Length: 294
Image (cartoon, rainbow, N blue to C red; front, side, top):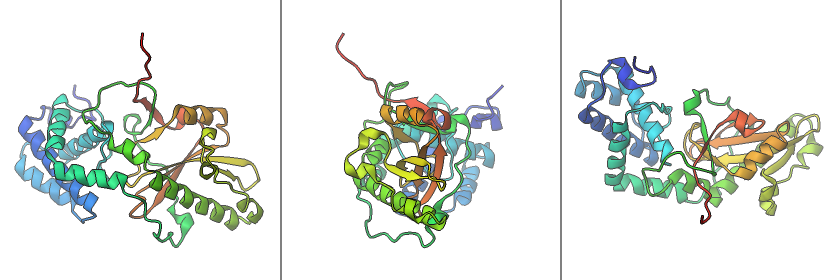
């Protein structure tokens, strides 16, 4: 019986190469629009695909688009906000995506520019800073991922991991930490804890990355709150990277450890938080081998 998370389950038949290629082409077109900041209508693109693929329903096409998001995220490529990755997909799909990426030089240039460009230091703070806080995204286990750099399950399809490149963008990371500093100050100030607000420390800015967190803040009752900030220009379910030290620290001080995930940073920043050890709040997927000569 087909798995319900596989788009072939909608019709009971595997997708043909022609069907997959048509759907991947539309997905990449929408991804390019999104990276350019151009408006588009997902429902209309789905309707056009239904006309092109009469054997596939709206729901089947939605599943396949979500499958494409999963493939892209697993190989370090950004995906379209709103298509939450579904990891149970045909091998054929990963092949077609790899072929399409190799051909889409214009899109690849857009992605490279997006992940490497400096953050806008003059970007205005949200008028109501505390309003950027939203609930953590709800997702199935296979969809909710962070990446810890230890070992690898599979070889990447692409020669570059663009999500890792974004994670190494110091300008973006610093801008995200500064926004969280402002957020924490406002949170404590609003709660009437002005003295605590003035004691918040941006430890990462002092070169203390070895601590395993970026900001030392406080609960409103005075207890310590240690914050690791991860920032992306993409959607809420974009995978992020955690070092082995960060994972270990999150377990050592899990009662006071908080992961702050800033997303859609360049457009309209939003924030969700996860408390406790990363192994409990996230699915950790090892992505790098450590090796010595035998």
